Length: 323
Image (cartoon, rainbow, N blue to C red):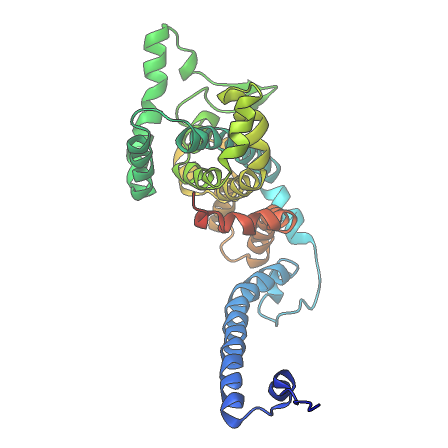
């Protein structure tokens, strides 16, 4: 009986030494990775270095600003000066109230509109969504004058319709002035334009299109209507997208500057970004004070990103979801 030796193909392939061409191709595959890290490190340094300089300068006396990076004498005087020089506590409360209110309302309106555009069937749905989406093509600066005129005229129109002068009056909380009921220099003007978002609707619609229709049909079989499906099926599944939109909206409203600058007249209605600009105008050469104010404004945004970065990163990927 003869025994035929089977060739050990796997071993031959595993033990075959790589040739020079293989080394060259492997080296070429590794090279882009190295350059990628170099580029990322360069970009990261361009972002971190100014932030680090601002943080260190906020602990310096003004005469020590040009004496190197590390403060020769550490001080908290700048932070105390920022709080004492302006109503920074009031600016913080105003900004936090506006950012949280706009975030909650925008998330609610966006998810309701997204559910209608993604799941409900009605005549003209796609055309209406296209028109809503087209508003994203209009630059925000173009809308400033029409929105300003609208906010200025709203109190007059409401007073005429309701036969009162309430909407042109002043509101007080305790002894503190909190602006007009509506119109210029009011919380209504700072909140209302941000309560609706075509981008938020589009992002959530893309996410809802990726949810399986079988889950929705099972809910209908169990006796749920459109409202029940929205509440008990869609909302729990859309929590990551809702969290991402909430983070985007909060960060955008926290650092908003141009619209609050146009809408507010009184010091008690200012937000943090406008107050910081006022600080830099009055204390042009006091770099430590200005940097301290900047750090105080950055802290909430950094905390939000650090604590919610999982949803923040997932939100960036939501635009690629297809139905």
